[in-house]
Length: 212
Image (cartoon, rainbow, N blue to C red):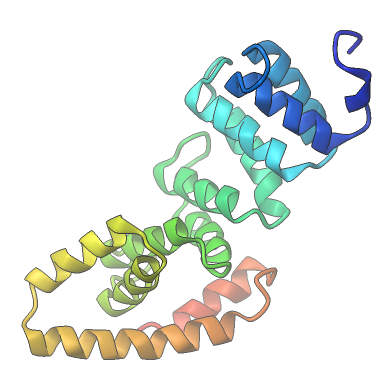
């Protein structure tokens, strides 16, 4: 720690800022070793942004030895603090079995917590899971609901998925599925309430609004 600026000692935000600057080579020399040390100091004090960046570094092997398991551990810490990005990535890791055993229920849990905060990627991924019936009953109406909301947030992949669905439907079917999806959208976000609700309650809420 003697090599690190004393101004950062005990200040997780300053440690994060300097660590990320060294990671990116922004206004300072790019130094992944110093970046990792500073970010780890910040993350170990509970600074969520540092936990997320460490997760990214280990996920992609950016200046460190690539490790999905270590990435998952840092993302989990940030996700547990309500970081929507980390929650979405954690959902993907559980869906794909990266760094953890594949577990669609855990994937749904973390995507839902992220989606409840309006995070477009989580909305998209939930749509994909419901469209394919991954960890839940296949439900194209609920999938359409998530794609529509994600697309409204500017997610291009969600709009592409909507276009693919539209190519398989008649204009009357498109109007009907969008009507049903809108009804479920209103019920879904109203029922979610507090985004910090435990996962079982959140999953139960979604099951209640599935089309039958």
